[in-house]
Image 1 (cartoon, chains in turn orange, green):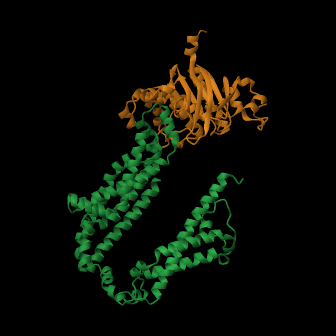
Image 2 (tube, one colour; image 1 turned 90 degrees about the vertical axis):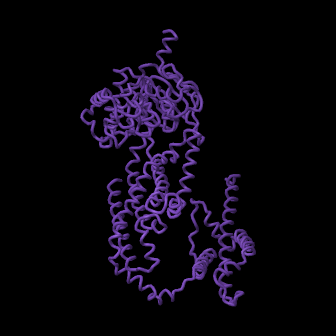
Length: 264
Length: 358
């Protein structure tokens, strides 16, 4: 594979990324990372290791303090205003707390994924083109929530709300999905039902996924590659199949013990 | 861990404690001075006993300030013998437990108890409390009370008509206030104005303007608008409108500051523009509390609109004032009962509706 092809294949490229918050906390420190099209990259690390900050720097919900980020070959860290928003439409995001608009209908929540391309005035009146409505209904059907479009979002269970959030991301027709602890607030029994939908986007639609996770079972089942953060630095990068006790200690510290249920 | 920071904090506590003690000891000495002058039998230039105002003028402010500064310092220095001073106790770090002793066994306890008693005695004299007059001269006010409990029907018709005007006055002031306060509140919310220097300065400007507007009483606003648009209900509407905008901006913006940031992030991540983020991420979260505050404000405006007429701002107060001046107590009684009934109804109505919303 020549250099140009490799560059086309590269969805995310991060060089020397650092973030220091106004309160002096350093969340990221000289992070270098490259993500190729079609990968399902899982980012792990303790709470506060910088995973969420890393994801939010990629779509600039947080502005980095140092370093540069390229998305699809364009320098994300150089974009402003309309160009930045246009780039964000190509990146879907899924959150631990689902972050739906609770008082809006399920359908309105899904349609909000189309805000980036909607015309301003109708969108402020919650009006969307019929074509978008059809796409939204199809997206709901796809995540197994057909017929629930008129319910209020907060009437749904946690697992259902997260699937609405996935349908919302789907409406953006994104090339990259950022998933920040997508199943951490869900009942363990429901985790696979949500993860399988994200996996389907990756396998069937060819969307690249960057996902933070805690659960070793899920990491082994879904990740194609693993990156570990500790104190804002990348401390491990590798194959999820070879994720063992040694690497566990390297990531979580000497004090941590892998419980038999987690790494066995 | 007797490091520099620890010593610095202890030094700060000494200064703060001493300042508090200084104020308290000064107040103590001034009140002793006041009571001594009041009971010394001294007479003023007119030959009469000194009035409270005259005594307040005669107090030995500067010498006592100096004496109390020294006494406060002494108390801090001799804390080993005298026990903790009030200032030292008030500046104690929250995680440090106070010593469990009875107040009667400390100088501080006796000092504070005496200070409270001195304040009550001094206050009694300064506000010229006259218990005997209060208890024996009810007959002078009997006419008024008789009028109030025997309302006259002469003014009932006019009163009812002006009551309708009063309620509309309050309603219009609230209605005009909603759109202005809604827009301004977004600029007065700290969490939405962090983006740029421009947003920051708009935030400070709106905050300052609203604080000033709120600090001026509606009756004063009414006087301004009466000169502007003339006597009548419209001046009252404008006066209550200005005050309501300021009050609602405060309530609305505090609500915006307490929203869940999650939906805002999610909508931003879709590539939505700022207006769309506000419409989808912020507005749905604040609509129910905004409605509740607005109804509460209408309730307050009905109360205020009943007296805004005292200065010429329209409503029922406009016919109440001359009847008070002329001593037509029966008619005053009718109007007061109408006002009380309206306020009572609004109170219950607004409480019931707000209960349902939030």
